Length: 253
Image (tube, rainbow, N blue to C red):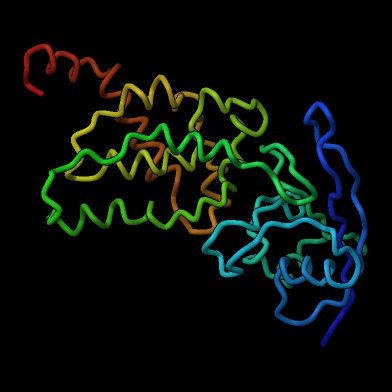
C-alpha cells in the first residue's frame, strides 16, 4: 500500500556573514510501506531535487551522519520510521525537515560539525599501565561500555540549550564529550586527573540537567544520569566537599 507524503525541507546556503539563508520548499512523493525519513529524502533527490544536499553513509544508525531535525526533534533520518512520523504530523500538514540548528550551515540539510573534531583533540587519552594485557573487573568494564556505543551523531549537542541557544562552544564540551570524558574518568586503570579541566575548561557547571541530550540519543546512552551527573559529583567532591577537603589536607586521600 502506498500513499503520497509532503515534505517541507529547508533549502539554502549561508550568506556572506555565515548566517543561514534559505527557504522551506515543499516536495510531494509517493511513500512505500516500511520507509524511513532518509528513504523519502533519497526519493526526493531522485525525482524532484537532485541538488538537495544531505549527508549519510551507513543507513543503519551506526555512522551518525544523517542527523537532522524532523518535525522539530533531533533525529537520525535513517532510524526515523515514516509511520511514526505520520502519526505525529497533524492531518494535512507537511513533514518538516531542517538541518541541525546548533551548527553552522553548509548547504540544505548539511551542517559544519568541525567543532567536534577540534573538541576531541582536547581530550587527554587514557593514561594507563604500559603493559597491554589490562585486566579489571567485568562490572567495571560494563560501566564504561555504554559510552562506547556513541555514534557521534551530535544530536545531543544540537538539543543542548547551552550550545544551541547560547553558543558556548568555546567554554562548554557538550554532552557528547562529557560521555567521552566519563568513559575516560571511569576507566579502572586510568590515572589521569581530568577534574580541573572538566570544571574549568569544559564548563560542566553550565549543564543544568534538563535531560534533553538523553532524550534524543539514538544509541540509548543515559547521558545525563550515567555520564554528566557522575562527573558533576566528582567536581563537587574535589572542590566543594568539606570532608573531602579536610581528608586531603590530612593526607587521607
